[in-house]
Length: 514
Image 1: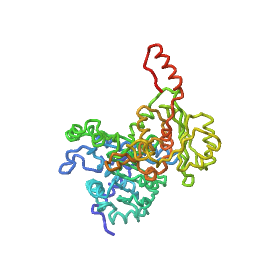
Image 2 (image 1 turned 90 degrees about the horizontal axis):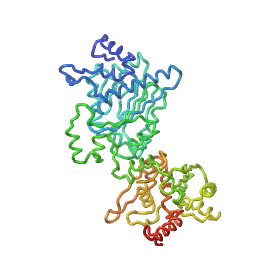
Image 3 (image 1 turned 135 degrees about the vertical axis):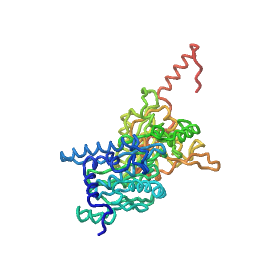
């Protein structure tokens, strides 16, 4: 068996250091102890330690481990740590990735560390060179053998771990985990009852399916389970964007690059001068904020968010419209009913049912028609012809059957589906919707392209493509936009006209025609 290049006594001192809970369960103290901060003739001669934001992240992990250790003492299952950070460029994300992986390999012997990125060139050109650089600076650099896309224990160290600790070192590594969007299941990998860390670098470019598969790595309830996602927030949809939604289960943080120590402010100022402080390029490259409108995003996230927060008085004189999206029960899709009265699409809660056939759903729709007495009911005719036929058989007269793929009545839209989403986009400027995360995703995630000879016609992406990206059918969004299909007069229009005629007779206001 090959031997350590340093004396057994020195190696034992390193082992004892890393076994100390003050280091083993505190990556901030590890980073301070393992690298030659301020030491002359080293790359860190002029540096005292991590940047402030890096230190805060490392210390947050230490607090998490302290809490989870207490849970274990009470025979409770330790919770895993998920953290997503959106930031401007050049703040030191890659260094933090390197430190965390080095800490895990050093203080959790036998743990598995997987690193993915938006592309293989990112891993080869940025992420792994940074990991290898910091490991080479560490006290225990001799423990490991870096390769192009992995860091493994040196043979002598692997033998020692096997013999003295009885640990299989097959999955004891920092390993690049590549993916293909066409075959997300191939991303599945090992589990670990020792410790697991998965890092997504430039996570904004990692597909939805890969993010979901990654959840399967964390089935073992170990103390040290970490999933990190770091990126400039380039897309207003997708897996990384979803981690910032309330209720996602992720801790999340935005970092303005201008606030980071030693940042070259002129680089950021140049971006601000060119694009403006609120321009999307500035938001992404400097402020660490998602763009207001993604490059292909049909409805901005901000517009949906504001409609979810807005408070409006009820408008009882406005027409009440029901939208019914009929799900494909055979594929496990729910059916959803939504309501909109003027600018209010929140007061009457949405109804979602699973596994209803057409007759059951028709009965449910009939119950709601009798209950709220809508002025119009718009039903998706693609899957809902049976529902429509049944309601007509029951003598309900205010039914509008809507074919999503039919022609638009407005020349700027490719089809009826795009037209309804376009009408909803305009309405959201002053409308009020409920705070459903499903509705938010359905509206803010759908993308479009320009078609036609002049490339001036908006066409939404196919529903099946959207379904694949978000992992489910966008039934809440479709039910909501169906309320824009019928054109219905206000309930109090007659009273308004009579009132206006009275005002005109009294010499006030303009005459009302029609």
